[in-house]
Amino acid sequence: MNIFRNVVFAAALAGLCAGIVMAVLQTAFTVPLILQAETFEEAAPEHSHEATDGVAGGAEAAVQAHTHDEDAWAPADGFERAAYTALANIVTGVGFALLVLVASEFAGGLANWRQGLFWGLAGFAVFTLAPGLGLPPELPAMPAADLLSRQVWWIATVALTAAGLALIAFRASPLMALIGVALIVAPHVVGAPQPASYETPVPAELHHRFVVAATVTNLVFWLVLGAVAGFVRTRFSARLGAPRAGLV
Amino acid sequence: MATHASTTHDVASSAQSRNLQLALAGLLGIFIIGFVGFSQLEAMHNAGHDYRHSMAFPCH
Image 1 (tube, each protein chain N blue to C red):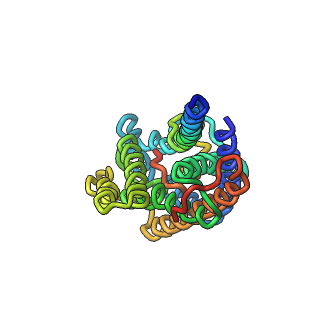
Image 2 (cartoon, rainbow over the protein chains, first blue to last red):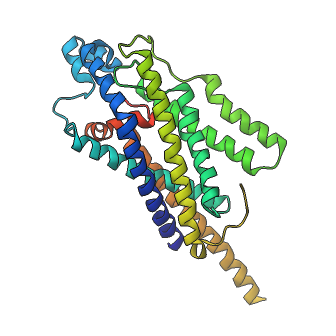
């Protein structure tokens, strides 16, 4: 299990670095906007949760809807909340780094940090740009379609965009490139699940700032993740096998 | 001849083992992201709330 261990180790380092950077960026740029939006959620509870509203009804139930259940554990505001956000960033950073490293190993292996940067850009396109077109980053108190259908669309869009990019990048044939483009476009032709109404107490200006902040912080996250993964990969090339082909 | 055959076999099985290990690592990655980003457990949702919004995961 040498290869497995080396990939996991490289992913742990890349995820740790990218996760810490992302946690700092989120604390500075996205979390303040989330907290600001939550004040609108408290002020206008009827907009908070589509599903719970229908079942429970009444403003009181809707106020609780954002946290779903008063009895459920939640981190205390302030340091504890920020610590869990940082932890989530690092843990998923390792998860994303595993996917990037595994995909790049199948494609020949990252030769250096610059190749890692390009893989990071691909990760940004697959996990942020493509799903974000149909389902832009949303703030609390914003209306949204049924959760399950949005999750299905999100996962399908990520998978199709990854497959499409792979066909374009690694199959030197015009037909495959065309199929790749079709795969990337397909989920947007179908369209993401949209809410019945777009009415929200959150000002459009606040939401716009959040979309920009979330997208740009994700870009930095993916570039750091890719570059560190590429750098660490070169330290283990003896055991993982030297990179076989220059893909970028 | 025998040596040649066994070398070919070794190469094939090591490639197979390599692919299996990579696939395992990929599955681990998908599992981690799915658990933190998509789990509907209340405690997970609340702990990762700001993270999920910031990463634009579909969340509540």
